[in-house]
Image (cartoon, rainbow, N blue to C red; front, top):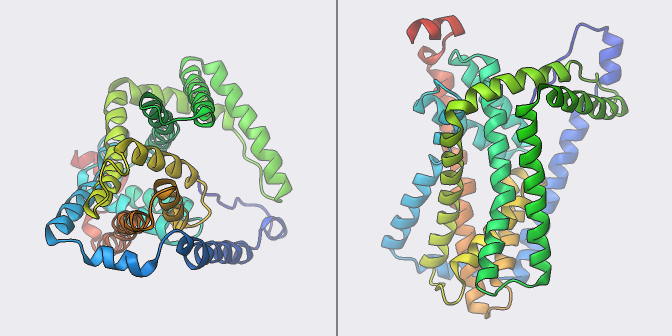
Length: 366
């Protein structure tokens, strides 16, 4: 989330610490292309027939397509309330431009999540928003999103247990999930409650990251203990008046994304009797958690394979093909659609210099 910068050390030190980024970038690209090619060229065809998938998509009516596009459009702006809640003073236009542009980067480039954060910071700073406020909003929204990713599988498993569709293995997973979520929430709560604990977390993080940095011949971080204390104080100030809004916005964002998948599965002809909404929620939750590991940009291939396998397991071939079609439509609306929209947003931001202000200019305007 933080961008590394070179300090004023000698050229020899800078060369020593350089990880030759062109090599790592090409490795990331090769791995991503290889994984995507393996999934769509070999693994995915074992689950569904591309010809039957296309016939299913062609069979959709204009009414069904319109319904899907509408829910997808609402989902595209569904993350904006969270950004606005976590960053006081951020306008809707500013949230939209920065979010769409960063999402386009995240969905197309290996390691795009980190690059997307950099784009978000650059755009929001150009609006005159202080870097400290941007960083705080990004960290808080990221923490709440991670809580949601950990909590949603637990909720889904609980619902499956109520319907009698969960076995001992999934029950154990639910227990582990509850424990992990509880520990994460407890640690965050203690960090906010205790300045001494915040300093300890910062110091421990500094030691851990420092060892990794030394191994990679990078400059180790400094001052994370003091940084954790400052973050605690500012986080308390933000959450005191906005915790509920941030929580509700996080829930809305996840519900909208799930709704796109649910509607896509229904409009291709898969009924609730064949695949219930709770099973869809469980597959959505677990695949979203797994795809958080950045193997490919935006989880390309991983999400499609995971959802199709989880939802179509044990069903007849025609239903599996319908599910595969729904998953690909869902991904076209949630993974591909943000790319041209984000590109247009970035070009608009680059062209419109009237939006740009210094911090002092923005304060004078407000």
